[in-house]
Image 1 (cartoon, helix red, strand yellow):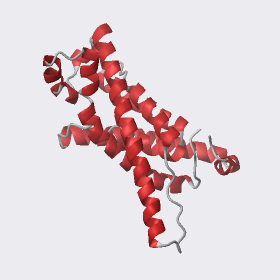
Image 2: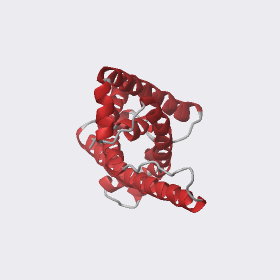
Image 3: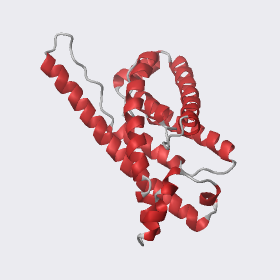
Image 4: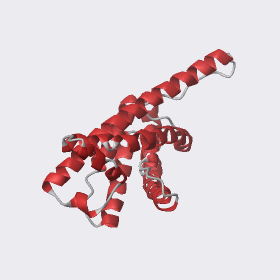
Length: 219
């Protein structure tokens, strides 16, 4: 739930805060698209980094702005691929998980001992690591279910090849159920790209919080 401090800050200048967050959401969606295209089409890396700035907004501004960025990304993907993209539910899940389990940045006094500073940042890294694992597993499962359902009821899966498709033939040859194939084939990619998304998103959010001029907790 949003802290009282955040609520007071919003109450002082709600119009300006809403405009500022709206601008951040639009910019975050654009940066997501640019970063993802740069990584996949220019660097040729098999990673999905289209939610780095969604995560940053979720960390810094909460659920509603995070969901708003995910929706803007979804609209861009639907226009680009000229078809409905159901994987937006993975982005929604990621935002909800971030807001439910996000750690706070260490509030360490300037006079704190080196041991206390080290322990504070070690705790932060540990919490981010657990959050990353939770996101990687959840998105693999949810994405696999969406892919499985699309194979049953639509032809969407056959229109575009994806990175995880390279893992599927071997799993299918092992007589693994199709649902399990769709889930497990996503794990190798998500283990890598969710690490980048969560850690990069958190540290980018530190800058966003300074720009917002108040600290927000998730609703």
